[in-house]
Length: 282
Image 1 (cartoon, rainbow, N blue to C red):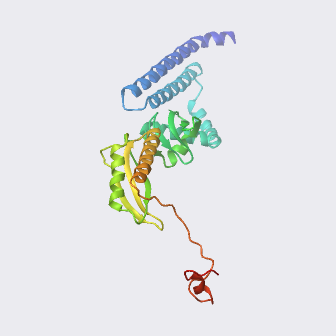
Image 2 (image 1 turned 45 degrees about the vertical axis):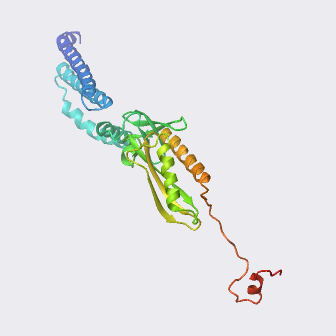
């Protein structure tokens, strides 16, 4: 055994040196991937991921080459053939993890949104804090953290509220039927012109959209900066300003009301018409 070990010692040393060279090459590949992600249009996290995968592949390849040098009878093909069956079982066991991982790679590659964007998923809404390989972290408007699996983010519809600098806001204002439509429209336009945060380009729109049972309804459209906090603040200013301006002009803002009749006014029953007559005391 001693003589065999001495005979194999040069091969062991050569295999060890070759393995160290592959590890060194893997580290260089990882650094190159990170640098590529920073210098190119790729996401830095995706560059780091590519570099990490290259480093892992080189490490495994170096281990196989070193094993062949130390043990010439070793055949990597036989080992890979055996791993084929094992990999299928591993794939089923870690299916969800692999789905999230692949979805994270595609998200980092295509970049439908960035860190700092405000998005809405199927069940959550907030600001993107981090895009990792397996999950995306959101900070909700209530200050809570939500960890959303990347498979859900990639497969479902995502609303990116801050994809553009401007965002349109819409709400409804109703005025009475006896009030002037054009006067009410002009008052609303004046409020929109004077409200801080309402953008002038594109300009606001005020359209009559419905002759409702109790009011003539206007659809008020205006543009503002896309952050959710700004949208809420400007919407509050606009709604408050319109209410005060219409009240000051004496224009009614009616609320829905219902008239309930407890008798038949068609006169099909005796006494109904008489009860409806003015001055009837019955």
